[in-house]
Image (cartoon, rainbow, N blue to C red; front, side, top):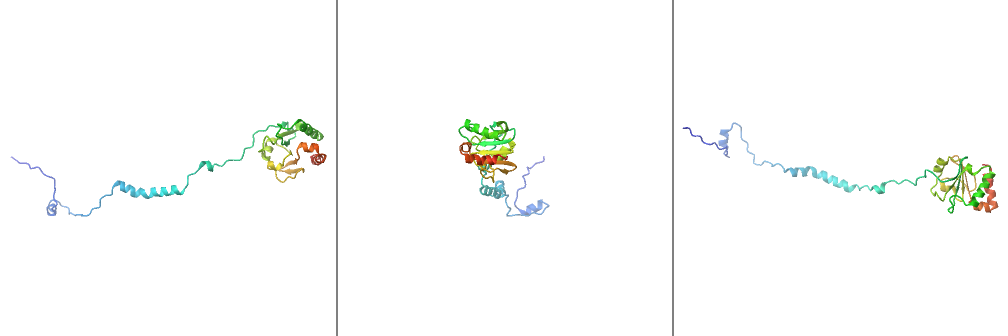
Length: 203
């Protein structure tokens, strides 16, 4: 009867015994570096990057979209309320806060001036600056295609028209400009009426 003895796994620290059992040479390493903990490795790799990002975040202020939005200037209206038909592309701009365009007396006086030039209300467009305080030359020119602009009671410079002297008909970007007193002053003062008419007559 054969007896089987259970074989225990090879467990020995005896180098002579190991050399007899194994063909390969045996090397003993007393100090074997332990692999770094995975989390420690990640910290070593990612630490500098995270620090750099943190520094960049501090160096670059957050963009305030409200403050950096460029706000355009007040837009030119797409249309205007005006009196007349603009048949001859003559734009008359008055400044009258009390009426939509002009009071009856001023309108009658203006009609006489137009008649003296053989014009009528159908030939002009009358706009009230008091209704549109942001009027500008380019917007008016584009809308009315005007060849002449007469302003009563305010400086044409308010329309971004430059180089124009009071009560002198002058050219600006191919358009004749005449800025003068308001209709009340012209109507009541013969000297002013003469100055204005002398400038208007040859136009």
